[in-house]
Length: 80
Image (cartoon, rainbow, N blue to C red; front, side):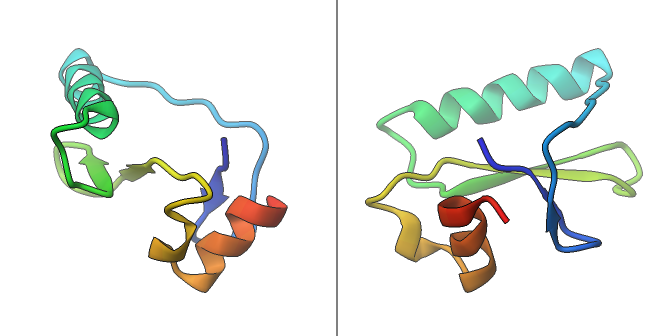
């Protein structure tokens, strides 16, 4: 697992996520799609009602690392 604070550009280790039920349902759907062999999506964006908050989720492994930007590659490889 890797967590990036995009504002500061720093890797973080602890995070608290609080969801409305509708947001949790949407997140579950995105996660199910990510792990499904039927999807070609590399990532999903989960936003709150007014789009002031966003969570981006993606899967990564050694076969897909080149699909990511240099910043994300550094996060995946070095967790920094």
